[in-house]
Image (cartoon, rainbow, N blue to C red; front, side, top):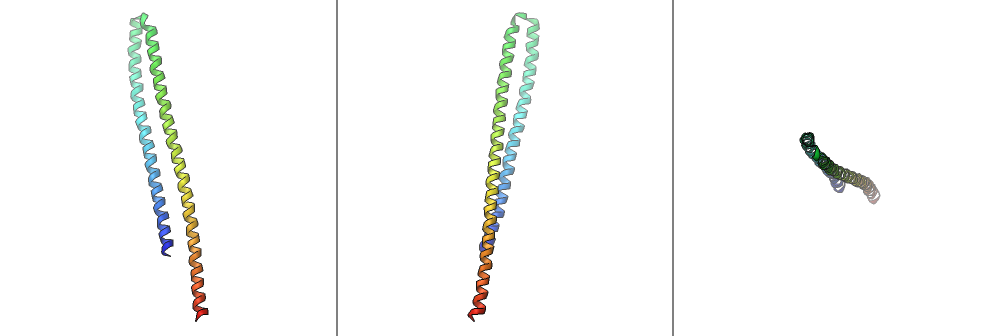
Length: 137
């Protein structure tokens, strides 16, 4: 019975640990996502400012127009690469969370099975003790 209680306690603790880890991973993902959004907003604002400055230069200096277009294209390409990197990191974190959840579910199923086996053992011990008590006397 003590082993059953111990296993049940371990299962509950494991569930709490799993939930805490899930919350932690979701928080990390959320924080990273929020950080990326802020960084992206700053980058967009910077790009807008640069674009405005470039447009002014283009209007004032027609001979630098091609150079400005190339620079803007490079900036956009750089931004797209960062965005792809952030999306990859986000997908990897989500995949990691999915794997952890599957592991936790499997462990929970194993603990539940162990509890059922222990309960059956307790019943068999009780039956054995009762048989011994009534037949042994």
